[in-house]
Length: 427
Image (cartoon, rainbow, N blue to C red; front, side, top):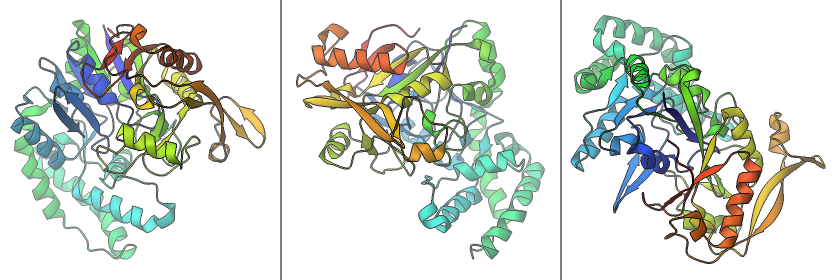
């Protein structure tokens, strides 16, 4: 019953797509269990680069069945556009499965997201404006539209009416926007029904049967641990659970079926959007990390905020996810620094703190306590084994492993599929 969870151990953008793709040839199913098209994965296969937003990275691996679980929110127009783009490039997308219980991002969810963020002004959260948060709000408020509702016009109409009853009041009276017509929304959503019907399935049944048959299932989280709605830097978080527990609820499998939890960890730290970031750099080093690492959001197109590695965050991710392994990415980006600072603790109100503070105020005022590690200048992109790395690069990896609390089982030394050092097999 080999079920693996693979997730981001920082604020997202750690390179989950590369890690999932690396494992894709060895797994039977790859499952997205939360988030929507606010997450982006870049996968490089040979000389081809693929930017995925909603689809599981496993869709690029022949023989692997990609699954969009019930915990995901789906924008049908984005889904169809992404499928079309892959089909045009010769990628077989016919094996995709979509949970009938996944919620639909409607046009009014996108509208509400955008106007609300503008209304907040300086207090904005930094959402992607793609309707993710409002869709999850509708889900929790029990006025959401699910994929299966596209196949019953009467139910769909009733649900859209119920959702817009309040939203139109808010749009017209608070935001001075035009009301949204129920019929227009229903017509647009019904137009997607036939186009995606071939993919809709009872994915909970499919996945549990696969596990019972000893198939290998990989659960792929979007975003990262520090963006989790419960365990992240609230309120500057996403609206779902990218942490390991979200795999169970977002895919419909029990926790006893999870055999391994792999955290993706960048060799430095980045985040997109607003919120506290203790190791953020505003100098030439920060700009160099951004430039060398190509740190621009796959989905948002925004420059990522860059900083040194934060071991406090890594330890926290190990704890809340029960991580069994780390996949360290982008080690090659650090080539060329004589000294590489690593945040080993925080200073808060004059006191040294080695674990992530639960208080939002304390975390906001946390100052990084750095330990400098010796750097390296040798090109590491051709390294095939750990021993091929320069001694200082080896020492850096070992230091991060000791500080983070879980073994580093793979290391990314370049963007390509084959530019990875595998220390311990994940499967």
